[in-house]
Amino acid sequence: MSDDAGSALGVWFHMKVKRVHISNFKAVRDVDIELTDVTLLVGSNNSGKSSTLQAIHFASRSFFQASEANKQSTISLRELEYVPSEDYRELAHNDLWGNRQIAPESVVSFVISDDAAEARPEYTASISLKSARNEGIAINPNVSPQLIPLFRSRDNVFSSYIRGIAGVPLQEQRLSKRNVYRKAASGDSNVVLRNILLILDEKGELGNAINAVGDVYADGSITLTSLFNNDTDYNIRSTVVTAGMNRAKPLEYAGTGILQVVQIFSYLYLFRPKLILIDEPEAHLLPTLQTRLLGVLQERVRECGSAALITTHSPFIAAGLSEGAQSVWLERGAVAASTVGSQI
Image (tube, rainbow, N blue to C red):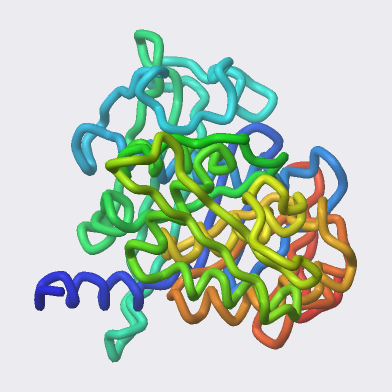
């Protein structure tokens, strides 16, 4: 690694997202959240939990794709890596986006501190989104120059969004890294999970992801492999071994729960995002695994210089939180209350 690359990685690691503010996006009316290493979003259906995650990811990926930093620009729908709805004009809260200057728009803002500096200076990023005059999204960013590399890096991403997994395809061809990253950014990582494991192996990070999965399952025997030979293979060969298996089996034989945990830690170690956004991870996990997942995740996001924002309905997820984490209760698109620790 060059001195410049090492310096850039150090700057990336020490930048911490302290606060996020979202206004006028889907179910979110106005949400202002002070973030910890792990922050849970709880609340009833349609309270704004998932909309909060979507707003953050949509804003960060749109700014990454904007033609120029800190200049108003337009992104066509076909170019967007991630959009929460093809009917994008409906993305305003109980309103319609417009393309006039005074038309409704959605705004996502961040406060980010440089924890490596003695004074811990804070910088801001604000990203406004609305309809363009032609079909597409108009983005108007106002981002501190110190933060632009966090949003526009091709090797690290500002946010990763995990919205659940419903299994993996039976076969998966080797794709370019750029194509894998694009599909992962769209939230469709299950269709490229073997590619992600392969890239992790090439980067020397697969062992970290496997160890994290093993900690969640309290199973030191868990092994994942992902192999591809350019001369002989049409598809990637990925296998899994867990307790009770007498031999390695194809990845698609793994249960949905373990695939979801693999997906979470693969994202974390592949991208080391500033924010990893996870929508209801309890869906396919037993209560004890839910609790363990949160404990392991809190430890690993600190290790990666990241923070996790997680939606949940499960008290077992909250039970895994330790000191320094918090739960935020959303109601009707706004923050109703927040608590520190494992109480929700």
